[in-house]
Image 1 (cartoon, one colour):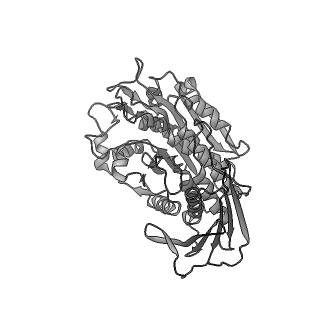
Image 2: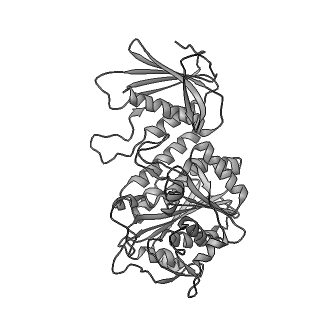
Image 3: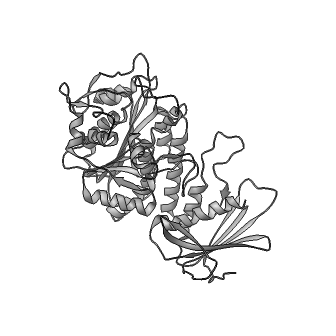
Length: 467
């Protein structure tokens, strides 16, 4: 046995759907490293985070964990909970008792356990959204983060007959703390009056009317420090440039950028912040019909740039173009971060483990990169360059909605967006197409939606604004 010093903090979990057999797991976590023999290493990316030992005594599993060092890194702290959850599932544990020593962040541990435990299986008979329950009271920060991540996963997982522009709006309004954030929404008539023509063009093939949602921190007396922008294509068939049928069901989560954005606002609305913020999302469906927009159409964007549509499946950039322009004009942010499942090309480049980061400011990009490492919501900076930008030029109109040829598609998409970012405004674009959904789950998340982006931004703002 590996005895540990007396812990001073505890947590307990119990299986919700109790089995006939009661199997207990006792976990002790020490903030001291150990060189004892027979310990196994838990490493990630070839870095040992902790060592552990598991045995059975008197019909009870005992798990001893020794941290290699005390870390302020969110991932290193919360992965303990995910590890305990995975072992609880592996050994069919019905009751878990966790004791931690003083240097261990038990809030982060419990958060990691609960994050991994959530799976949105609402439509499966006799299924629960989580397997375990606990009476442990998370801190306000972690509770707000967990609730916001679960809301994000819910939005992304729901099918498009349940989540569409108006239902997305209604569900989101109920989730925001309106004591701290003002929420407003624009319907089709209001959007038309404003002149968000690119967004309207994408939506015109669907019977579901578009919506735009806006959020701003209350009592804001100056230009906002940061504006969050999200692409919300609630279903993307590709429109007239229709997608292949195989895998088209995944396009229910082409609104993940909007889901990330509103979940960030939900998270921030529960906290006190030392910076001002706003958010905007454009919600549409991209469908083929007799009224759908078509290849060859030319649309006058809200900024006044005439855009030629060469592919109706390059629709997300059209939605973002209008709401970035409108949001920047209205809220005059110092910094803009947009989120979008924008291109399949980013998945070819980076797979499912990194999101594509396109940024016009080196300091901003560096902080986002390190926040990605610290949360394991990793981002990789991609190029922005005039050589790509000129591919969008045309002898006939101001701008094409796709580049020349089949290569560099994620970059030309980002270059398109940059055309609509005001000069001297710091801007980061996160292409999250590869990281939003994982059928097999990942180290911190169960199968399906990963909730990618929210924890990244929670860490980013703590660094950028030193909140």
